[in-house]
Image 1 (cartoon, rainbow, N blue to C red):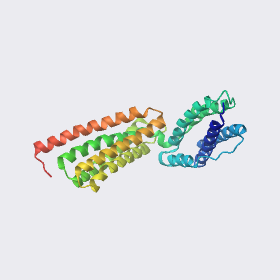
Image 2: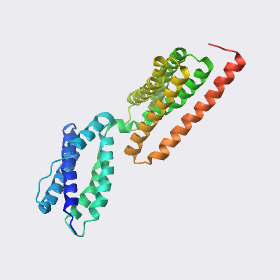
Image 3: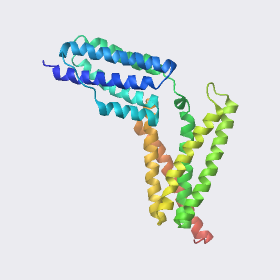
Image 4: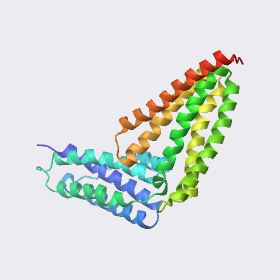
Amino acid sequence: MDIRSDLLKFQKNEITEYHIYLKLAKRQEGKNREILTKIAQDEKSHYEIIKKRTKEDVKPDGLRIFWYIFLSYIFGLTFALKAMERGEKIAQTNYETIEKEFPEISKIIKDEERHEIELIGMLDEERIGYISSMVLGLNDAIVELTGTLAGLTFALRNSKVVGLAGVITGISAALSMAVSEYLSQKSEASEGKNPLRAAIYTGIAYIVVVIMLVLPYFLIPNPYISFISALSAVVVVIGAFTYFVAVVKEQKYSSLFLEMLFLSMGVMVVAFVVGLLARKFLGIEV
């Protein structure tokens, strides 16, 4: 069996991940830097093991290196590493297919398993510890503001009036949620969790959703098209954040996404009905 082409692919993967881990390590300090540097050294040794068989140098994948470094800037170190580990699980399966023909691959498989079990689990990143606060802010903003905008859109039928009401409601709710999270964390005295930072993460997550949902009402004159655009933004926000949580927490993406989407759309439908009834029975026309 000719396994040279497979080995060259694996070799390219190992040298690529060596450069990714090394670049990530340079941006870290203390324990995180040590862990990432150790993983990078392991990846380099894997490259050398395979090179002894192929007797060929392979260049790293520059685009892949850029992508994971970019993810680390946008979503944080832990997200980028968890995303990489998903790829490494596939690589482990591929490695096992050639283990009989290339026994040296056994060391690489063991190292990859150790990376996931021992090393990646040791990483410590602040924002990951505050995921619950971000989830609180995002969930509440999406459910509450989507429902509010649905009701106001069909009750008032004026884009800028609805947008203004959404801004006022959203900012007020964001501040309220931030204060509630602060008081909640302070009363619970969660170990290692700063109440002020938890409040900030909650408030920021809420405000980001407010901006994305309300912006269409100031850009599009037609309130119904604005509402459809806001709904599209809801799906994007839910999709992006549930993917973030699914990767970091190693949970199933589809179930998280559908649950959050179902709750948001359910509240929206209720608010839509309330808006129609309010306009009909109260006789309010704008």
